[in-house]
Amino acid sequence: MLDICSMRLGFILLFYLFVNQVICQVLGCTDPLALNFNSMATQNDGSCTYSSITLKPFSSRLLQNYLPEISGIMKFKDALWGHNDNSDCRLYRIDTSTGFVVEAVKMNGGLNRDWEDVGFDDSFIFMGDFGNNFRGNRQDLTIYKWRKSALSDSFVVQDSIRFNYPEQKDFSIVSPNTTNFDCEAMVVVGDSIYLFTKEWGKQGSAVYRLSTKDSIQNATKIAYLPVGGLITSACYNPKFNSIVLLGYSDLLQPFLFLIYDLNGFDFQRCNKRKVQLDLPFYQTEGIELLDDYTVVIANERFSNAFIKTQESLQYVNLSLLLGDYYKRTLNTVNFTDAMMRFEISQNPGSSQQSSRLIIRGANRCIPIQQEVKVLSETGATLQTLFMGSDSLVLPQVSPGLYLVGNAQLGYVKWVVE
Image (cartoon, rainbow, N blue to C red; front, side, top):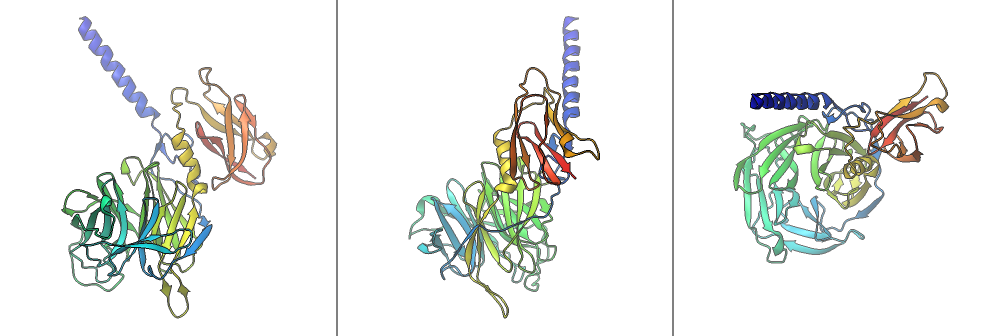
């Protein structure tokens, strides 16, 4: 009888825990920088939307003539390396302070039909020979593998990965720059390679996954990103599991596509934000992280009857957009049991002096003392305040939209009229 009662009690307890966990999971937008941020959401559902923003590079360097068709770059052995997308089978080491090429290494054993992006893991360098924009009918899409330890004049290909897209059934020749099965971007993560296609017709990007191990594969489609442009390169931050895609529009207006809060590489339930770049008529082709907040962008030479742009490196800082998320990721504190959260108390039509920040759900187990930040709409810290009790009168600011809170308890929107 005791065993039966114990089993019933255990079942009831498990059922209670399951129901409680389901109730506590609130789907919604979890990014305080988003227009539709939900301070009550506990799980990102990928629904975040953002205001438009344009970033301007803080520095630039012209490149030497060795890389007129630079297509991919990578940071390797504390140096920046780049490659062309024509028949040139060399990797070039670039002095980022001057833009000069200081070393050229022949990549023996691999053909450059259309090298588009480069990456590496602990053992290998991966070179993506998968450009397919000319006729759209390539059946020899290849990723070459070279051992990292063999970076020298006798660098010889170790292996290769041949793959195809199962969704492509028709291999008839099409007009240049019309296929949806072109690709210029990849990242290598663990034992997987993620490809981001360049859809000339749909102006989107399908995400495919490959294994780093198998020599012949069918690429597996795992997601679709409505980027509204042509994706040309990608870089990955393993520290925060975030990806930055690079691309441009039909009119050569470059942009970034930020992907973060990417749990389990679920591209549907993550934050996705498009950011315009103040680089008109730049054919941006390569991107790499220099640190957590800085990316370097390479553009190839472009000219027509009206425009001429020389190949160069452009440096862009992303701290305004990713800084707060990175800090919250590093300083995550679980306050689920206390159910503490910030709220704004504000009487409609009253002066902003009556705006008050309140902590709801506080208990004596967790100290009330909190450092609180007032952020601009783009995430820049405007003021840092100290909260010594469960409420705080907010300071006077200009009319606009603000975010108030901290990394531990989250942020709430504060609208000042």
